[in-house]
Image (cartoon, rainbow, N blue to C red):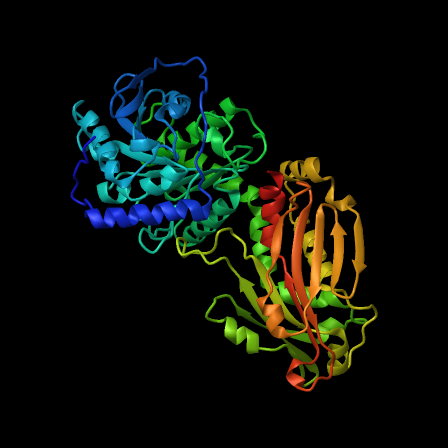
Length: 537
């Protein structure tokens, strides 16, 4: 198929560069190929015709006034979307038809994307529809969403629909909801193991911020997570590599929810009456309702982000118990570092305690370690940081410096991490999420806790977690040490956390290095990701 030209067509060098960067993004961000096949359909309420042309698979009822073009996921044949297309046609009462283009190698690419859009425009023009471009919506599933994100801007389409995908934020094709100039629906599944719910949480936070100053964003830039839906259910339902457990809902129910969400969004961005089954106003209300329900699903993600802000002070309090109202006399001064460029400053910044009048000022440097991903300049591979390094004070030093008293021995770094895990899990209140976690790992409130120590490390076992904290002898060793959080290679239901700590006495040759209590901690967000998504795989 030839490449149709548009007023905003790219140069060949730009296309090649975008293709290269996007391929890198797929590998780095986990948008793996979906390997699916088959998929049935239920009896239709309007007559639906399926035609497989040389350029696209077409699923239509009569002559619809709106066409949705779907870019499939990596290595997905158009036929994998036949059932979803039927559901969309049915949900719209036949008002919306679906084209799923044939791409070379069954992989969406910028060389053919314009031609796919122009095919839909031509179809509508041949049926006498004026300004046909205003009646074409573009959707992309998984990797297809990355390639679909640019065409709506060039063609000025009425909307983009991202299915188990999101706007990539790269130096070359970087976009985000804040400055994306067309309406866009970001539609995800709660149990999607490839484009995880953590990505949806990130996008939702952007949408929510937009909506504070412009409530229309709830309709024009909605982020919706569908309960119990997984990645493969956006296509024909066969398991996708990396997907999370069996979907909590049946394939046909999932596709019906997906189709209705798509049709409601199309109705909000079309003229009233363009969709036979729902009015523009009712569709907008349904979209807002779905956004509100999504907020409930994502609550633990946002709560855990707030916990990150106070992680070092909270852990310092947990490290040892002060007598009476001792902590009420302490003012925390936390200096946060989060970039590679700021790491040297973090290395030289030391914890300290000083008297300011009748108050105690406790200075704690904090390094938030994010994955460095050149293809996604927004954040990191996941919503959460890899780890958080806290330079706290030792109990011995702080008691001497503050004049306060402690009533219990200090806790080690392994136990600090256990307490973060326990507190983070308490942020999950959704019954469905708790039930899935309990089904696999048991009730967290009943997990056993065991501790042991030797000369080189502390070890804590808490439910499925084994936390190993190795003792370092210098600050350089501590900073250079890694933080590992992964499933045990031998026992898939056991998870290992390998971290590091450094504790120095209250006296030292160089006083600045005395009284240190350094520890690398798991971020609360990583615990939520594990409990609601990655731990369930």
